[in-house]
Length: 269
Image 1 (cartoon, rainbow, N blue to C red):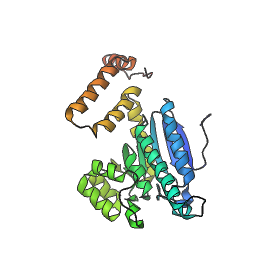
Image 2: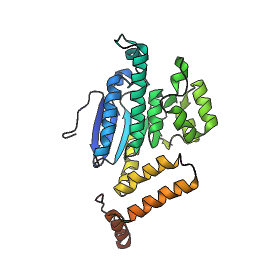
Image 3: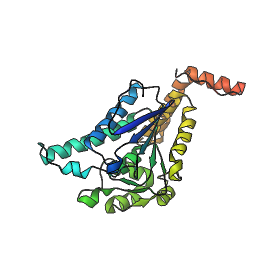
Image 4: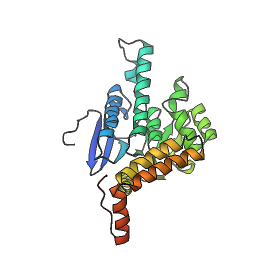
C-alpha cells in the first residue's frame, strides 16, 4: 500500500493499476459498521485523485460478501437520538453509493454467501457483478419493518432487472440466488468461489488494456445515458466524448499500434 492509508475494517491490495478492496469484518459477516462505512467512503472518495488506480474489485472476507447493516451496533446505547442516528447512517450509506458511481474507476463486485440489505446495495452499485454459487441476495429492509426502497435499491434494481422484478424483490424481501440472478442479468457469470478473484482480475485486466480516459469516460457515459431524457441527449454526450478522445495521444498511439500490429502503450494523455 506504500504511503496510502491503512484501514482497520477493509484491506486494499494493489495488482498494478487494479486494486482489490476486501471488506474485513469476517466475524460479523462484514456487516456495515460505522467504521467500515467510514473507511470505505474515505477510500472511494480518494479515488478521484488517484489516477494510478484504474479498476477496483470489491469483495468480502470470510463466509459472506456483506450481511448488511450492523444491527447490534445500530441498537447500542448512544448519546444520539434515534432520529439523529438514523439520519447519520442513511446519509453515510447514500454518500458511499454516490461516491462509487461518481468515481472514474469501474467497480467489479465479487459476491459470495450473504449479500443482504446494504450488502445487496453495494453489489448493485458496482459496474459489473460476479457471483459464487453460494451467493444469496435480498433487499432485507422491508423484513425489519422498513420500506423495501433503501440505499439505492429503488434506483438500481428497476434499471438492472426491470420494474416488475424489482417490485417483486423490494415488496417481499425474498432472497435471490446466484442462478436466478444470472438469468435475470444481474450477474455477468456464476463461478466457483475459489475462482471469483481470478475471474474479477481477468476482466479488470481486459479493462486496463484500454486507454485510461476511454475507460473512465465510458463509465461516465453509461452513468449519464441510463437517465438520458432522449436518444438525442445520449448521442450528444457520446459525440462530445469521442471528439475529445480523438485529440488524445492515447488515441494516436492506439491507431498506430493497430497499423503496426502491436499492443498499444498508453500514458493517460
